[in-house]
Image (tube, rainbow, N blue to C red):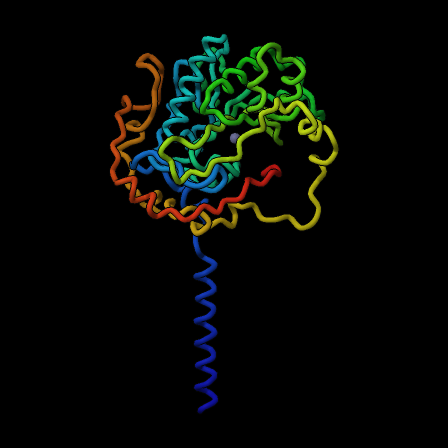
Length: 345
Ligand SMILES: [Zn+2]
Protein backbone atom coordinates (compact mmCIF):
# COMPACT_ATOMS: atom_id res chain seq x y z
CA UNK A 1 0.00 0.00 0.00
CA UNK A 2 2.74 2.28 0.99
CA UNK A 3 4.49 1.76 -2.29
CA UNK A 4 1.25 2.37 -4.14
CA UNK A 5 0.78 5.74 -2.36
CA UNK A 6 4.31 6.70 -3.17
CA UNK A 7 3.73 5.92 -6.81
CA UNK A 8 0.56 7.93 -6.77
CA UNK A 9 2.41 10.78 -5.17
CA UNK A 10 5.15 10.54 -7.76
CA UNK A 11 2.59 10.37 -10.50
CA UNK A 12 0.85 13.47 -9.18
CA UNK A 13 4.19 15.23 -8.95
CA UNK A 14 4.99 14.25 -12.48
CA UNK A 15 1.65 15.57 -13.63
CA UNK A 16 2.18 18.78 -11.73
CA UNK A 17 5.61 19.19 -13.24
CA UNK A 18 4.21 18.47 -16.64
CA UNK A 19 1.43 21.02 -16.32
CA UNK A 20 3.95 23.57 -15.10
CA UNK A 21 6.09 22.90 -18.15
CA UNK A 22 3.07 23.27 -20.42
CA UNK A 23 2.12 26.57 -18.75
CA UNK A 24 5.66 27.87 -19.02
CA UNK A 25 5.82 26.91 -22.65
CA UNK A 26 2.47 28.52 -23.31
CA UNK A 27 3.59 32.01 -22.32
CA UNK A 28 2.19 33.95 -25.24
CA UNK A 29 4.53 35.37 -27.82
CA UNK A 30 4.60 39.14 -28.06
CA UNK A 31 4.05 38.93 -31.83
CA UNK A 32 0.72 37.17 -31.27
CA UNK A 33 -0.45 39.73 -28.71
CA UNK A 34 0.60 42.76 -30.74
CA UNK A 35 -0.35 41.19 -34.05
CA UNK A 36 -3.93 40.82 -32.79
CA UNK A 37 -4.38 44.53 -32.06
CA UNK A 38 -6.81 46.28 -34.37
CA UNK A 39 -6.56 49.80 -32.96
CA UNK A 40 -3.89 51.85 -31.19
CA UNK A 41 -3.59 52.55 -27.47
CA UNK A 42 -5.61 55.73 -26.95
CA UNK A 43 -3.08 57.36 -24.67
CA UNK A 44 -0.56 60.13 -25.17
CA UNK A 45 1.84 59.38 -28.01
CA UNK A 46 5.03 57.68 -26.87
CA UNK A 47 7.48 55.16 -28.26
CA UNK A 48 8.95 52.56 -25.90
CA UNK A 49 12.08 50.54 -26.42
CA UNK A 50 14.10 50.16 -29.58
CA UNK A 51 13.17 49.91 -33.26
CA UNK A 52 13.48 46.13 -33.13
CA UNK A 53 12.20 45.61 -29.58
CA UNK A 54 9.41 47.83 -28.38
CA UNK A 55 5.96 49.22 -28.90
CA UNK A 56 4.19 52.57 -28.95
CA UNK A 57 1.08 54.32 -27.69
CA UNK A 58 -1.07 57.06 -29.12
CA UNK A 59 -0.52 55.95 -32.70
CA UNK A 60 -2.41 57.31 -35.67
CA UNK A 61 -2.91 55.81 -39.14
CA UNK A 62 -2.16 57.30 -42.49
CA UNK A 63 -5.33 57.15 -44.61
CA UNK A 64 -5.36 54.61 -47.44
CA UNK A 65 -5.49 57.56 -49.84
CA UNK A 66 -4.13 61.05 -49.84
CA UNK A 67 -3.66 63.59 -52.57
CA UNK A 68 -0.09 62.46 -53.01
CA UNK A 69 -0.01 58.94 -51.62
CA UNK A 70 -1.67 55.56 -51.72
CA UNK A 71 -1.12 53.02 -48.99
CA UNK A 72 -0.46 49.43 -50.09
CA UNK A 73 -1.30 46.02 -48.58
CA UNK A 74 -4.19 47.40 -46.56
CA UNK A 75 -5.09 43.97 -45.18
CA UNK A 76 -1.92 43.96 -43.10
CA UNK A 77 -3.18 46.85 -40.96
CA UNK A 78 0.29 48.35 -40.77
CA UNK A 79 -0.56 51.96 -41.57
CA UNK A 80 0.06 53.00 -37.97
CA UNK A 81 2.83 55.08 -36.50
CA UNK A 82 3.78 57.66 -33.94
CA UNK A 83 1.99 60.90 -34.97
CA UNK A 84 5.36 62.54 -35.66
CA UNK A 85 6.07 59.95 -38.35
CA UNK A 86 2.60 59.96 -39.89
CA UNK A 87 2.60 63.76 -40.15
CA UNK A 88 6.07 63.65 -41.65
CA UNK A 89 4.94 61.15 -44.30
CA UNK A 90 2.08 63.43 -45.25
CA UNK A 91 4.47 66.35 -45.60
CA UNK A 92 6.98 64.20 -47.50
CA UNK A 93 4.25 63.24 -49.97
CA UNK A 94 3.47 66.92 -50.63
CA UNK A 95 7.10 67.95 -50.94
CA UNK A 96 7.90 65.03 -53.22
CA UNK A 97 4.94 65.90 -55.43
CA UNK A 98 6.19 69.49 -55.62
CA UNK A 99 9.57 68.07 -56.67
CA UNK A 100 7.86 66.23 -59.52
CA UNK A 101 7.46 62.74 -58.03
CA UNK A 102 4.01 61.37 -58.95
CA UNK A 103 3.19 60.41 -55.39
CA UNK A 104 4.18 57.89 -52.74
CA UNK A 105 3.23 54.27 -52.54
CA UNK A 106 3.37 53.70 -48.80
CA UNK A 107 4.36 50.23 -47.63
CA UNK A 108 4.46 48.91 -44.10
CA UNK A 109 4.71 51.31 -41.18
CA UNK A 110 3.73 49.61 -37.89
CA UNK A 111 0.97 47.61 -36.27
CA UNK A 112 -1.55 49.72 -34.30
CA UNK A 113 0.42 49.36 -31.07
CA UNK A 114 3.68 48.36 -32.69
CA UNK A 115 5.52 45.40 -31.23
CA UNK A 116 6.93 42.44 -33.12
CA UNK A 117 5.05 41.34 -36.22
CA UNK A 118 3.76 37.93 -37.19
CA UNK A 119 5.62 38.17 -40.51
CA UNK A 120 8.22 40.39 -42.11
CA UNK A 121 10.16 43.14 -40.44
CA UNK A 122 12.42 42.83 -37.45
CA UNK A 123 12.13 46.55 -36.78
CA UNK A 124 9.08 48.80 -37.38
CA UNK A 125 8.12 48.13 -33.73
CA UNK A 126 7.95 51.61 -32.20
CA UNK A 127 6.09 53.55 -34.87
CA UNK A 128 9.13 55.36 -36.22
CA UNK A 129 9.89 53.29 -39.36
CA UNK A 130 8.14 53.46 -42.73
CA UNK A 131 8.73 51.72 -46.05
CA UNK A 132 8.19 53.71 -49.23
CA UNK A 133 8.14 51.97 -52.59
CA UNK A 134 10.63 52.99 -55.27
CA UNK A 135 7.75 52.49 -57.69
CA UNK A 136 6.01 55.83 -58.21
CA UNK A 137 2.29 56.14 -57.57
CA UNK A 138 0.25 55.52 -60.72
CA UNK A 139 -2.02 58.30 -61.98
CA UNK A 140 -5.13 56.47 -60.84
CA UNK A 141 -6.39 55.00 -57.61
CA UNK A 142 -5.47 51.36 -57.22
CA UNK A 143 -8.26 49.07 -56.08
CA UNK A 144 -8.00 47.36 -52.72
CA UNK A 145 -7.23 44.12 -54.53
CA UNK A 146 -4.50 45.71 -56.64
CA UNK A 147 -2.94 47.07 -53.49
CA UNK A 148 -2.64 43.51 -52.24
CA UNK A 149 -1.25 42.07 -55.45
CA UNK A 150 0.68 44.71 -57.38
CA UNK A 151 4.37 44.13 -56.95
CA UNK A 152 7.01 46.80 -56.55
CA UNK A 153 9.87 46.85 -59.05
CA UNK A 154 13.46 46.25 -58.02
CA UNK A 155 15.92 49.02 -58.71
CA UNK A 156 18.73 46.46 -58.88
CA UNK A 157 19.70 44.53 -62.01
CA UNK A 158 18.91 40.86 -61.63
CA UNK A 159 21.75 38.78 -60.14
CA UNK A 160 23.87 41.85 -59.61
CA UNK A 161 24.64 44.38 -56.90
CA UNK A 162 24.19 47.35 -59.20
CA UNK A 163 21.36 49.65 -60.08
CA UNK A 164 19.30 48.84 -63.17
CA UNK A 165 20.05 51.82 -65.39
CA UNK A 166 16.77 51.32 -67.24
CA UNK A 167 14.82 51.87 -64.05
CA UNK A 168 16.84 54.18 -61.88
CA UNK A 169 16.25 57.85 -62.60
CA UNK A 170 17.32 61.23 -61.25
CA UNK A 171 13.83 61.48 -59.79
CA UNK A 172 14.57 58.49 -57.55
CA UNK A 173 17.70 60.22 -56.28
CA UNK A 174 15.70 63.42 -55.69
CA UNK A 175 13.10 61.48 -53.74
CA UNK A 176 15.78 60.11 -51.40
CA UNK A 177 17.35 63.56 -51.11
CA UNK A 178 13.99 64.96 -50.09
CA UNK A 179 13.42 62.20 -47.53
CA UNK A 180 16.86 62.80 -46.06
CA UNK A 181 16.26 66.56 -45.86
CA UNK A 182 14.05 66.35 -42.77
CA UNK A 183 15.93 66.75 -39.50
CA UNK A 184 13.75 64.10 -37.85
CA UNK A 185 14.92 61.49 -40.38
CA UNK A 186 18.01 59.83 -38.96
CA UNK A 187 18.59 57.12 -41.51
CA UNK A 188 17.25 55.77 -44.77
CA UNK A 189 17.99 52.16 -45.61
CA UNK A 190 18.64 51.28 -49.24
CA UNK A 191 20.30 48.45 -51.15
CA UNK A 192 24.10 48.93 -51.32
CA UNK A 193 23.87 49.29 -55.12
CA UNK A 194 21.59 52.27 -54.67
CA UNK A 195 23.93 53.88 -52.17
CA UNK A 196 26.78 53.34 -54.64
CA UNK A 197 24.78 54.94 -57.42
CA UNK A 198 24.21 58.00 -55.26
CA UNK A 199 27.87 58.12 -54.25
CA UNK A 200 28.85 58.01 -57.92
CA UNK A 201 26.39 60.57 -59.22
CA UNK A 202 25.15 63.10 -56.65
CA UNK A 203 26.38 66.61 -57.43
CA UNK A 204 26.48 69.67 -55.22
CA UNK A 205 25.49 69.17 -51.59
CA UNK A 206 26.35 65.62 -50.61
CA UNK A 207 25.95 65.99 -46.88
CA UNK A 208 22.63 64.12 -46.95
CA UNK A 209 24.37 60.97 -48.20
CA UNK A 210 25.39 60.20 -44.62
CA UNK A 211 21.80 59.36 -43.82
CA UNK A 212 21.55 56.92 -46.71
CA UNK A 213 22.60 53.59 -45.24
CA UNK A 214 23.35 50.45 -47.27
CA UNK A 215 21.51 47.35 -46.10
CA UNK A 216 20.34 43.97 -47.33
CA UNK A 217 17.09 44.05 -49.27
CA UNK A 218 15.68 47.53 -49.81
CA UNK A 219 15.84 47.43 -53.58
CA UNK A 220 12.03 47.49 -53.97
CA UNK A 221 11.46 50.06 -51.27
CA UNK A 222 13.45 52.34 -49.04
CA UNK A 223 13.05 52.49 -45.31
CA UNK A 224 12.72 55.82 -43.56
CA UNK A 225 13.57 55.93 -39.86
CA UNK A 226 13.02 58.94 -37.65
CA UNK A 227 14.66 59.53 -34.28
CA UNK A 228 13.03 59.22 -30.90
CA UNK A 229 10.25 61.83 -30.63
CA UNK A 230 10.50 64.57 -28.06
CA UNK A 231 8.92 63.42 -24.81
CA UNK A 232 9.37 59.70 -25.53
CA UNK A 233 11.78 59.14 -22.66
CA UNK A 234 11.30 55.38 -22.90
CA UNK A 235 12.53 55.41 -26.51
CA UNK A 236 16.06 54.13 -27.03
CA UNK A 237 17.99 56.07 -29.65
CA UNK A 238 20.13 54.39 -32.25
CA UNK A 239 23.79 55.36 -32.47
CA UNK A 240 24.19 58.39 -34.72
CA UNK A 241 25.30 57.78 -38.28
CA UNK A 242 28.93 58.74 -38.96
CA UNK A 243 29.60 62.26 -40.22
CA UNK A 244 31.14 61.02 -43.46
CA UNK A 245 29.22 60.41 -46.69
CA UNK A 246 29.70 56.68 -46.29
CA UNK A 247 31.03 56.28 -49.83
CA UNK A 248 34.21 54.73 -48.46
CA UNK A 249 35.45 51.36 -47.22
CA UNK A 250 32.20 50.80 -45.35
CA UNK A 251 30.39 50.78 -48.70
CA UNK A 252 33.10 48.81 -50.48
CA UNK A 253 32.55 45.98 -47.97
CA UNK A 254 29.12 45.40 -49.46
CA UNK A 255 30.75 44.66 -52.79
CA UNK A 256 32.87 41.86 -51.37
CA UNK A 257 31.73 38.29 -50.94
CA UNK A 258 31.45 38.46 -47.16
CA UNK A 259 28.04 40.09 -46.66
CA UNK A 260 26.43 37.69 -49.13
CA UNK A 261 27.99 34.48 -47.90
CA UNK A 262 25.29 32.12 -46.65
CA UNK A 263 25.33 31.76 -42.87
CA UNK A 264 26.81 28.51 -41.58
CA UNK A 265 25.86 26.47 -38.55
CA UNK A 266 22.41 25.85 -37.14
CA UNK A 267 19.86 28.49 -37.95
CA UNK A 268 18.97 30.63 -34.96
CA UNK A 269 15.29 31.26 -34.39
CA UNK A 270 14.04 34.67 -35.41
CA UNK A 271 13.75 37.07 -32.48
CA UNK A 272 10.00 37.44 -32.99
CA UNK A 273 9.50 33.68 -32.74
CA UNK A 274 10.81 33.57 -29.17
CA UNK A 275 10.09 37.09 -27.91
CA UNK A 276 7.61 37.19 -25.03
CA UNK A 277 6.37 40.26 -23.19
CA UNK A 278 9.20 39.97 -20.69
CA UNK A 279 11.68 40.87 -23.44
CA UNK A 280 9.91 44.15 -24.16
CA UNK A 281 9.87 47.30 -22.01
CA UNK A 282 7.41 46.92 -19.13
CA UNK A 283 5.45 49.86 -20.55
CA UNK A 284 4.43 47.63 -23.46
CA UNK A 285 2.13 45.66 -21.14
CA UNK A 286 0.39 48.92 -20.31
CA UNK A 287 0.22 49.75 -24.00
CA UNK A 288 -1.44 46.39 -24.71
CA UNK A 289 -3.98 46.90 -21.93
CA UNK A 290 -4.81 50.51 -22.80
CA UNK A 291 -8.25 51.40 -24.19
CA UNK A 292 -8.80 51.86 -27.93
CA UNK A 293 -10.01 55.04 -29.60
CA UNK A 294 -13.70 55.09 -30.57
CA UNK A 295 -12.92 54.23 -34.19
CA UNK A 296 -10.16 53.94 -36.74
CA UNK A 297 -11.44 57.04 -38.50
CA UNK A 298 -11.02 59.05 -35.31
CA UNK A 299 -7.29 58.44 -35.43
CA UNK A 300 -6.62 58.47 -39.18
CA UNK A 301 -4.76 61.28 -40.87
CA UNK A 302 -6.35 62.40 -44.13
CA UNK A 303 -4.85 65.33 -45.96
CA UNK A 304 -7.70 66.95 -47.81
CA UNK A 305 -11.45 66.74 -48.13
CA UNK A 306 -11.26 66.04 -51.85
CA UNK A 307 -8.93 63.09 -51.52
CA UNK A 308 -10.77 59.83 -52.01
CA UNK A 309 -10.64 57.94 -48.78
CA UNK A 310 -11.90 54.75 -47.24
CA UNK A 311 -11.93 56.51 -43.89
CA UNK A 312 -15.50 57.23 -42.93
CA UNK A 313 -14.95 60.49 -41.09
CA UNK A 314 -12.52 63.32 -40.68
CA UNK A 315 -9.95 62.77 -37.97
CA UNK A 316 -10.56 64.18 -34.55
CA UNK A 317 -7.74 64.93 -32.18
CA UNK A 318 -6.99 62.01 -29.96
CA UNK A 319 -7.64 62.63 -26.30
CA UNK A 320 -5.21 61.04 -23.88
CA UNK A 321 -7.20 58.49 -21.90
CA UNK A 322 -4.59 57.82 -19.28
CA UNK A 323 -1.80 59.66 -17.57
CA UNK A 324 1.27 59.04 -19.73
CA UNK A 325 3.47 59.54 -16.69
CA UNK A 326 2.08 56.33 -15.22
CA UNK A 327 3.45 54.51 -18.25
CA UNK A 328 6.88 56.00 -17.79
CA UNK A 329 7.16 54.89 -14.19
CA UNK A 330 6.80 51.30 -15.26
CA UNK A 331 9.73 51.42 -17.63
CA UNK A 332 12.56 49.01 -16.98
CA UNK A 333 16.15 50.04 -17.44
CA UNK A 334 16.86 49.80 -21.13
CA UNK A 335 18.60 46.62 -22.12
CA UNK A 336 18.23 46.67 -25.83
CA UNK A 337 20.64 45.10 -28.26
CA UNK A 338 21.35 46.50 -31.68
CA UNK A 339 19.21 45.01 -34.45
CA UNK A 340 20.66 41.89 -35.97
CA UNK A 341 22.42 42.86 -39.18
CA UNK A 342 21.40 39.81 -41.16
CA UNK A 343 18.36 39.81 -43.40
CA UNK A 344 15.18 38.58 -41.84
CA UNK A 345 13.75 36.85 -44.86
ZN1 LIG B 1 11.32 48.71 -43.51
